[in-house]
Image (cartoon, rainbow, N blue to C red; front, top):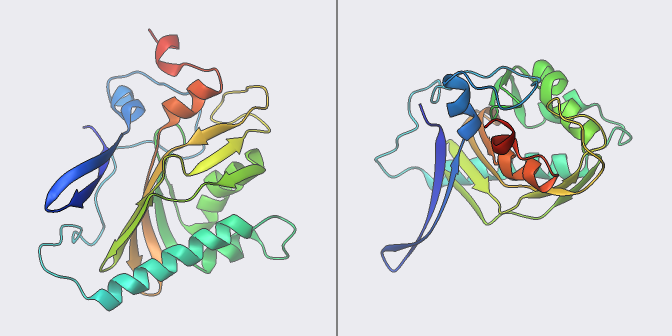
Length: 215
């Protein structure tokens, strides 16, 4: 099962640009090949939305889409400004935008996690502790429709690891992360998040060629 996400740009009724992300390490894992030494979450074949309503064939309420976009943008802004010295705990920051029973479907190599507390302990906390130097480069596209939304960047982030990440240790050097995030909102908060990160590209910039090392 090949997990992928695609954004297409339409101009004058035709496709002019396409961005496609493939979780190649996830495909490898299903074939019995482990690309990364360790992960903080769990890797598994990821399902679609719990509500089974991700395929939308009818026009959605614009107000609902705007509501989804506002919550996603508030969450992004919280991530950009939060540090351990801002006077608010990581869990309290996450609770502003996420339901307690959130599911974070992360990429293979990082893994997925369930509930705000476990997400803070298994991914958000370790990630922010590892990448204390983070530069947000912006997004090429943000889109919402009804209770669903997402964004992608090329790259979204420039990061410098300060410690071991995903079981790999490298000397401090900046690298870039190309990321797609897709969300489902439930009520006034986000509750599901499917995340695609080009981790093969990220590590190759840092001098670690995952595919070459596995030949």
